[in-house]
Image (tube, rainbow, N blue to C red; front, side, top):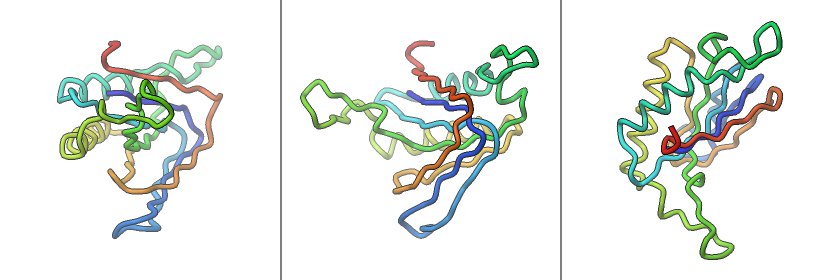
Length: 152
């Protein structure tokens, strides 16, 4: 799994199609997480990523050091599916997404990560898997971290 975790003052998604078109899902201070599921990912990667996100120390303590997590801050999390994190440009200018998991595999894992994050007791909102969405964020810092479960 790959993720881009951004510390935010606020973030939201507005669904642009489907039965919930126009619905807005928003969080206050916390994390905006763009999540891509790879072709070989499973339960182990979902758990590793959720654990790492909940413990990721990218919030400042009283001394200004990155020593606090979203859990410590009792922040909120907005999770958005983003298969394009698995784009390859090796073949030219048009991205190739063959390294991304197929939707029938990716969606349950995306939902699993959301459930694992929510089990922490934090407020977790999620975009709609496969839907077109307008994503907005007010970045804090800015602080953005790229994460890949193959690296931890």
